[in-house]
Length: 209
Picture 1 (cartoon, rainbow, N blue to C red):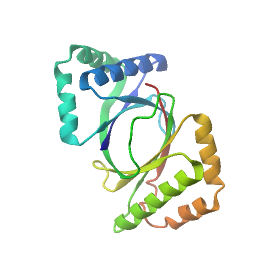
Picture 2: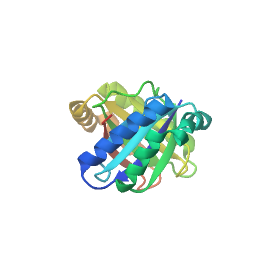
Picture 3: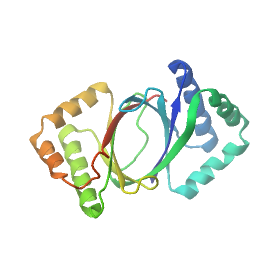
């Protein structure tokens, strides 16, 4: 199982962009026969940044699921409408879990902390091992499931941690627990030269539909 993500930037009134994206997620879900989730960026990304995600078994599965869209009049109409809302070309990514089970998509209203970092040359095995240990520790400490994935395309060696919380209160509680945990802080210090300097990035997103 892999996680497919399509990221895009929208402009104009947020309510209008959100309504269009919600309709698009529903149309694609119906045409593909699989659940497509819509996420909106809250922190760590520009206002208006959105992402569609879905679980796939690989590129062949993704292509087979997407094939009906070419002849779907409703989808094509919504795609055309989006030309006045979406700024620039969308960007697709495909990630493979290294730790944790993708499972079913979390319910609407869930929030996700998404952390990315690029492995430094010669540190592949060590960085992945460290990343799994961090995911396990944070899950144990906070009760919030944290998975680790490898991005298959784009920047080589990019790892992505995703922690899912039921709501904002769960995210706050997780942040308080990790920031006050000596073992977590020690693990952060131990990262040393495992990652490319300046490549770390964290964002918070909320499932809208």
